[in-house]
Length: 325
Image 1 (spheres, rainbow, N blue to C red):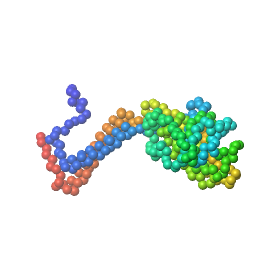
Image 2: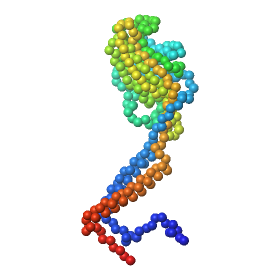
Image 3: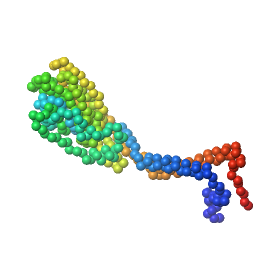
Image 4: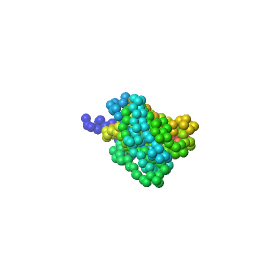
């Protein structure tokens, strides 16, 4: 007994094989289609997908960092910033956050080029977050400025709360501001929760609102969701994302409090976004083998059926078959 007795791939002598023009055209067509399909499979292998998992917040953290960069079209001395959470803890933030005069402009901030429409790439996001940029602030001559930039980061209790920017003497005791100076037109360059990563795009970043009345309140209702990103290399980024609904209301003079109100609630559910490869290398080989072999066999069978039908109507065109002993 020899090894050729086990051959599962019997060979056909070249003299018994006849090549045709239609077979050559079909071979070229099938080869082109297969190249396209194989490239698609390789692209899927090299690509990534994101798996989303929801779990109870596993982090024990009693503090939450809040990052703010808001410009209001009013003098700095006319504004105050406060925060109040559901534990009845009040924080006067005027001293914790930097305020400095600036020129109000609706032009986009340096981060305006960040597209919210691009697909999420966890690996690029984590890599960019590691290069977090320090928040820059430039002081100007207050005599030339007509607005106030409020920028900085501070820690608050990890509880639902309400941060508001209001005018002096409205809502709190103190100097009563002249109504002619009230203008709550504002621009939000940054509003985020957790460590400051300027590369992460939040819904309110690079947004603005123009006030149409002096006594007007802008209310933002935010739902903060703790989020953990993990890329293919196992690198981890712990941050927060949020959704927002906004509402504005105009009051008659001294019938309401003009200002910006950011009411946020923190969800107890954490979103885990884990980056996964499209498929394993073994899976790729199985798919390629099935694709190539199956396509060639199917194309060969179709060619034989079409040839049989064609030659049944035109028997004179059938190729001569030679048999030799």
